[in-house]
Length: 91
Image (cartoon, rainbow, N blue to C red; front, side, top):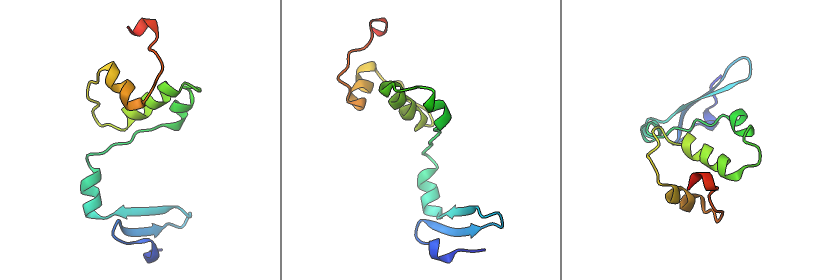
């Protein structure tokens, strides 16, 4: 079943299949913009990091890039806005 009320400048087509799931076809212009963006974020994998905020932030930072550029440690620390000192084995 087509759901025209959900379509607009960002979504070309919205369809509900018999089992209740929704499928969306993004507008061509939006697809062109997003083709260079990647978000691979497995919540189960992230949950195994526990409460380590830096590890969770690094996980998300790396998962957001198709190819992560090599970053210097201090650059990552600045991006993360951390005031913590690096552990001795990283220095």
